[in-house]
Image 1 (tube, rainbow, N blue to C red):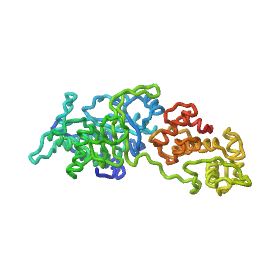
Image 2 (cartoon, rainbow, N blue to C red):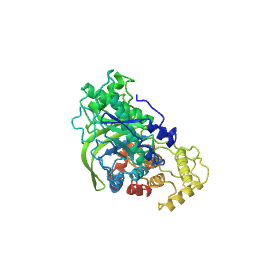
Image 3 (cartoon, rainbow, N blue to C red):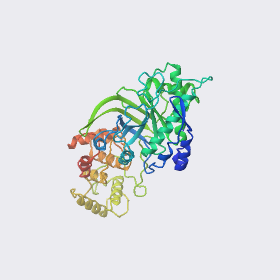
Image 4 (tube, rainbow, N blue to C red):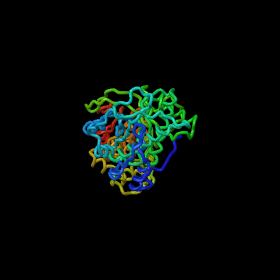
Length: 468
């Protein structure tokens, strides 16, 4: 498995980051060495408030050469299934050297809105890659071997590129601890010098990123660069410094991170991205962008922290039932009543004990909440009231890959709202998974709002009005 490290930002100050950048010492340009201290002026621009990216996430992403405008990003945030976006930040061989919108403000704005960023570098390419160099002033990876067979020039090129990419990342406010991705386009991996020099380059790239406090990611085709990395991992452990995460280009149309080209244990369980569809147009929110489609499973994946309510009261994960006042033959389920009492207490509508009995005080609090929220005032507690109460709160945009307490609100409300098997399968895990997606789409279809699997304004409004 790739080695782990403690990001520099967690161990040291910006002054130490500057010192680490100086470690590169000499920059290799087209095989020649040149001194540089270009990192120093921009290190102070790091935006400490920006979160590490992409962090822990399981879900969908897209990449495009040009970072989209803010207007397009806003539309796609609200209407598309994507939470992640690949952006080209560095590398002399990238097709989109001139970025119209990409700057520090663009980066901080997307991160604040919840986007996960995949910062990409497309620099020197494999020596046998026929489509590169792309310009007159970019270079291939050196395939020159030393007398001992080591490709030290290629490794030095990789370290140089890593330092340049960190400079670009800092200038954009991409925090240390984030993953920076190297785009190594497909090449003939049977060409020994080409393959070994490319691996040496990537080893230098990863090693220097670790020194500078960033995680290393490598994008390449499943059958060439990724396969070569996996073979090196298994057959020659310790020969190269391997990336922490891999981005597999495999256009099989399947939204997962699997491929037959590498072993099933490589960069598992959650250190993979797969680009499962190549360039095509997609339209969301009436905005069309030409993209590649990706599925991510990184870090801990999308994960929700444990929840605590009312000092440890169980408010159930699913299966909310109508509560009727006790009569001569039956009494309400104490677990259901406790959940109701706790939720009403959290809303400031009930201040009595949480003991599981539907007392007069509990009924009065329930009636008060029903009245205040425009619901029918009934002797007991209805399914409609459950849906409204469970979804009460801020109307946060949620979709596949979201995680946290707001997801639990939607999951509980969907469980209360539905009578079919889809709704019954939803449990309040706090992670917006496939079961949640299916149940939300079924609910949207049933109540007549846009069916998109996104908990946005219309869906929240329906839930909070108690539509069931």
